[in-house]
Image 1 (cartoon, rainbow, N blue to C red):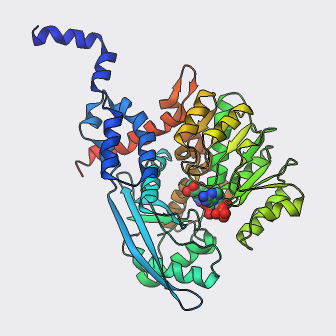
Image 2: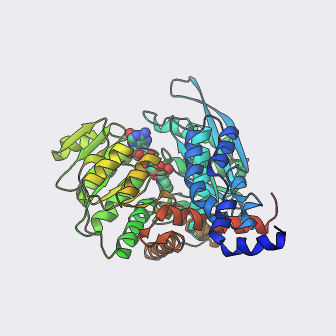
Image 3: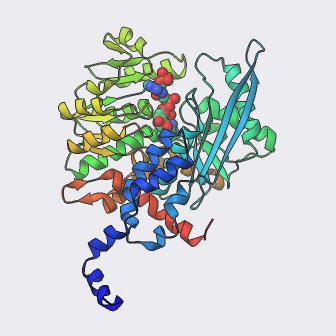
Length: 465
Ligand code: NDP
């Protein structure tokens, strides 16, 4: 058959053409696995994106042939450094610090710093990769990065935390800047640590610049930044439920974690008429069937932020159950909010949520749901707002902090909350644009493709880099 004779046949069957050209997801992942040995969380994050993006670009040679996704899965650079400091006994301690600058196609690198003993290069690469898509979804000009150290702040004195932060910043200062890379907080890095890091940056650079977000409001921080991730996770759920003709009021909610994201998630849920019955930390979870009221939550915030206490103390203070070493997903609920850490909700947990007729999940933590659990939830018809959409309110408000710093101006709480709600509604719309289908909405696919397209178009415009 001549070439001319073949052409109409291919045109007549565009679906077949798409299948012909679909890159093999497994081949793609094998290549990524070979380049990144011993980094399971990074592979998991790339897999989640690739399974949606590769079929989407199968008939779009502009993305496929320019190997845009392959480039996104290779960080621009990874900085790794020694952090040496002295503890209160005068003993020299050594930790490893990192900054992963994943992609700056649409703006300066932006993403938090995590201080936790589990931190390693693979975990930070997964977080920086995710951050690239998340920041794109916010609609603000921010690239993706992430950093941290394998330092355990638990049990350390205030002076030790300060010395560690100063030692960490003494190296990081060479790699960040308001138009280059703007870190923020994450697990183990809250307002106190950001203050120490900012002070050291200022001392070394002789510049008062908006180089970190999550700062105290007396030195350039934005109102609402502490609340933003938890509130945004709830606003995402609100949008999801409203799209299905429902609301948060009257719903029983299960929340994991008891740090920044979890506590402000509980605060907003309670304000909107939800009843939150659990909180957790790495020691276990409390189940308060009466609901965690505003007063009880205030007590938890004092416990965690001032006294650095354990959630177990809640059970004796308010007379409820504490389940040592367990996670809260078997407690019956309408809505679930994993807000602690990655892979904290597995297949067995997901089956329990399905059995108890849970309606929807909004991920406050990054990648909290294992791939197996995601499958169980999807099969059960439970809507899942993925982390890169649901917890983007935090970085979005960091973006608003950068804008305020540039203008040397401060917006009111109401102005920022209104902008945050608009941004979360916009993210929900983008999920619908690429994720809505006959049977409902695949929020994961919607978020992955919408996040990809904006970054990919910027990369194409800027040439092969
Ligand atoms: P915090 O350090 O304030 O709180 C973390 C909470 O999770 C603590 O209750 C902690 O318990 C618990 N936790 C941590 N590791 C584990 C574990 N392995 N098993 C059980 N519980 C654990 O962190 P954040 O609230 O800031 O962050 C929580 C999640 O949200 C993370 O995935 C983070 O990446 C994500 N996130 C945070 C943003 C922010 O603005 N802060 C923005 C976007 C995402 P314990 O004290 O016992 O360790």
